Length: 76
Image: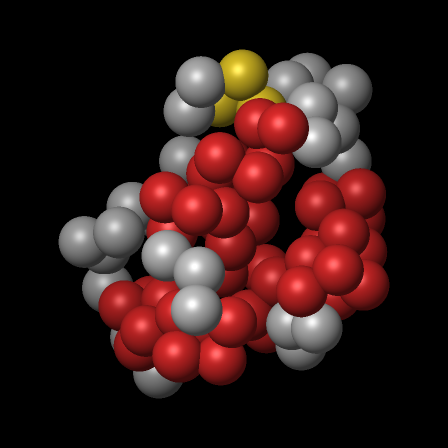
């Protein structure tokens, strides 16, 4: 599955766009602008996404990659 497919599936399931997740991550203190803060661990973000947004591990990792900057909304 491509990265874009993950993002589309996440949006279909939650109604939240990648921009919505970026905004929520900043509200939670995980990011500053488009960058993850140094002290934030992968498990912090993944657990938040699983607990509060009912994402599975793969989808949570896709959002983490987006927040980390490893992938963009146009990456495959």
